[in-house]
Length: 332
Ligand code: NAP
Ligand code: 3JM
Image 1 (cartoon, helix red, strand yellow):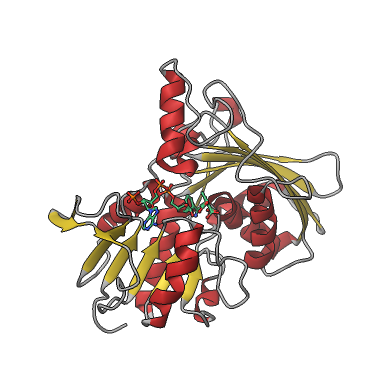
Image 2: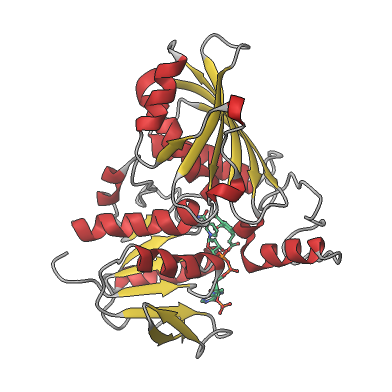
């Protein structure tokens, strides 16, 4: 891209959308014009970006009639289903945060540290940002798959309420203040763990669990890896934690494996249990990295490990990853 791109942010008033704007500002992302879009509920409101006020526009069929190069979408699956193809038909490159397009073979599913080459294969003009829980797992797993070849992965997640948007955050605030609400969840979230994220499917898994399984295969480009997942919502505001059990085909030296993780871009190893050092959600919140600790041999199999992986689900799990994809686009 020779000139600075014109940008649109769709869903700009939401939890992910406001973080898009923060990360774009922090990264000093180059742009010419910026369009801020949301639903009729927010149309006409003002959003400040880099000291300048922008009026929120209502998203409609004509939103992409003006010259826009890149649109960052985070307004839910049905909005992406309808409007991403409209934008793409106008020559816009869409980076979409919903699950709507992720498993489409003509839509790349990208974590820039892991599979940036996939970006080129965007036959529909749409690039998908993976699910937040998948993204943070992909960095350590890519590092380990390349070196030791993964046979099987067992994910158990402890996911923050920010992943459910404004409503999830409100439910936890209300619950902590002593009056539970059910804006985002079927049960109180304060003082609870809900083994239920997104809807249940016929096979007994939730859609969130199936996203982790299917997206892992697509991003690592290897359907032979056996993957299972249990995803749980916990009363934490700002970062997802994951216990990841990994079995390899090949043996490893644990110190070398730890170094392999530490050398991978975007990964920070925090692993000093003697000094109570391990990744923590409250420390990861507000940062762009993926933290890995509690790295230890799984003695129940020949070649396996357990690890604890934490990241800000709205940053690396959504906005930061999307802005990194957009940065790859402007390098083209
Ligand atoms: P949120 O806080 O509820 O915000 C939703 C945003 O979408 C708001 O800006 C809202 O605008 C806008 N919106 C809703 N309906 C719309 C419509 N018909 N037309 C235009 N804009 C509309 O939710 P969030 O947490 O930011 O998440 C938004 C979406 O991002 C999710 O639904 C999900 O698909 C995706 N997401 C992805 C990840 C990931 O893992 N990659 C993580 C979290 C979320 P108003 O202000 O006008 O209501
Ligand atoms: C994270 O439109 C919707 O129902 C959005 C649901 C949603 C998703 C999704 O499926 O796009 C909420 C939070 C995600 C996601 O990243 O998969």
